[in-house]
Picture (cartoon, rainbow, N blue to C red):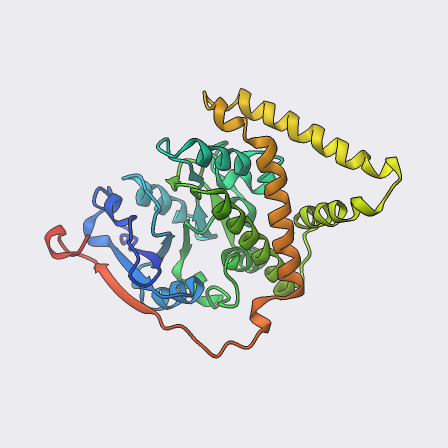
Length: 327
C-alpha cells in the first residue's frame, strides 16, 4: 500500500493581517494526520512563500491566499492528480462568491470575458474538463506543487510579485513537468471592492507581466496588446486622418458586443453587466500601463536596502488534534 501523501498548506499574509482562509480549513475532508498549515508573515509574498516551503514537511506544497475559501474535498481532489509522477503542479480557478456586490460581480465578469481576461479567463471560471495546461490557466491563490520539483527549481523568483508563479511554471514546463488545471478544484475569493482598488490590481498585474518578460527574455505578443492600445489612444489627439479612428470604432463595437454577451450569460446579474462597457477600457488601459512600467522600470533593478523579514509559524502540524491547533 502506498504511503499517504502529506500536504503542506502555505498562506502568506501581511504583518498582523487576518487569515480568513483558516475558517474553511476546519472542515477539510482529508486524514488529519497528513496535512499541516504554515502561515508566513511579511511584506514580500514571494519570499514568504519560499521560506515557508523550505520549512514545510509535506510531499505537496499547496499555496492559498489569506482569503481563499476552499471546499472540504479540495485536498483529496488535488492529491489524486499526483498519482502520475510527471505531474509537477495542480491548480484550479478562483471564483466570485455569490455574496459579492454588484460592482465586484462586474469586475469578475471582465476577468471571465474573452475581451477582458483573454487566454487567462479560465483562472476565474469553472469550465471544461481536467487538462494539461500552461501557466495561463493557473493562479497562485489556488495552486499546488510537488515539493521536490518546487525546491529543485529554486522556488519562486523573489524579484517578482506578482507573476512569480508564471515564471516558475514556465521553467517547470520547459523541463518536461506537467501542469494540471482542474476546473472543479475551485476556491472562492472576493474581487476588489472599489474602482480604485480594481485599477491598482490591474496595473500591478501588468507590471508583474512586464517584469517577468524582462527576467525571462520571452515576449508573449498577446500580453503587449493592451500596451499598444494605450499608446494608440495617447496618439489619437495628434492624428487628423479619419482612417486612424477605424480601429477605435472596431474596439468600441467589440466592447458593446461583449457587454451584451455578458448580460446574456450573466445569470441574472444584468446590473453588473451594464458596467462592462466602462470596465473593459479601464481594464486594458490600467493593465497596459502596468506592462509598460514593468518593462521600462522594473522594480528589481532599483537598489533595495530594506530587506523585509519573514515570520513563519505553523498553525496546524501533522497529526495535531483540532483542540491543539490555533485554527
